[in-house]
Image (cartoon, rainbow, N blue to C red; front, side, top):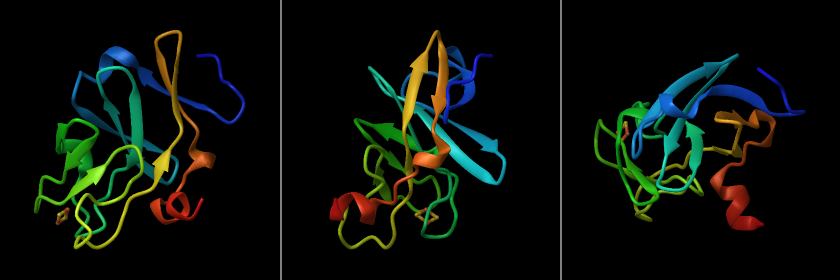
Length: 117
Ligand code: FES
């Protein structure tokens, strides 16, 4: 696979079905790639509550529900949907090139950084 500077080729787009997530381990990072209607989004795969695998959550709109205890996170920002939820998840820039999903792992942003930007 061709490598773009700073971007890691992760998987073919057909490996992530519509409105589902898939976990991928890249080095020390475990990420979850989600296929929305018109794009792919990537977040860290570990729920900040008790480590639930967010890749297995139900996707609704641009949010995912943790399969363990039901906390919901925005896939675009990593922010919890309810202000009463503790924690947030990092997001990673994601793009598709020639049918391959690429993730920029060095471009991770924590939700609190986005809120301050
Ligand atoms: S581990 Fe995700 S809500 Fe509890």
